Image 1 (spheres, rainbow, N blue to C red):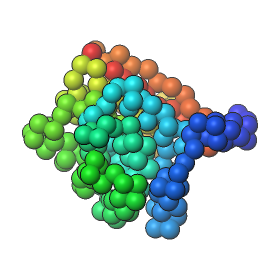
Image 2 (image 1 turned 90 degrees about the vertical axis):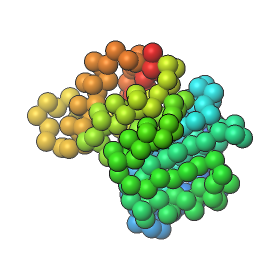
Image 3 (image 1 turned 30 degrees about the vertical axis):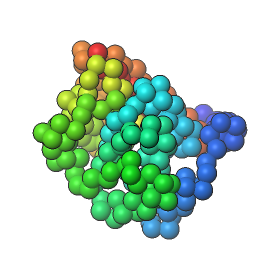
Length: 221
């Protein structure tokens, strides 16, 4: 693969239609400043998520995996004034950084960060009647992706869009003998997704500044 070409085209697209403002660039800077991993979605992927939220007419979004709030900001900007986004983050330090970034973006009244393990919080959201959500973005730890998907279905309605990032893992999902926990998690999720009769789904391969991976898109029937 010509990674240099893919990155150049990604930058070309970003300059045309995926421009970042100060709130977004500050969220990216905060990763380095706080020693967090630089694993946010790319600007073009963020814009893609925003467009998906607009296509859904989303008023109620759920995100699994906040990190510094970069993707959170992109999606929350697609919400109407009375819309809400709940984002789940396991690491309290990451959640604190994200809260500052979200406040800087002027989205504190629309975004709520819940700190803790997603598999603990998701049942609570279900019990509280927090759903159904119009859009659910899964971008957290990979081993329990299949479980996240099952909970996403419980928190959905017909027409809900479920998006899962990092499901191709640089093509390593093709390796049946992989011992990498993230790869195995993606493989298991992909099989569950393919077997589900509750959704119509596909997986898009993605290349660019984030190298080679993919996003799964599923619409609940």
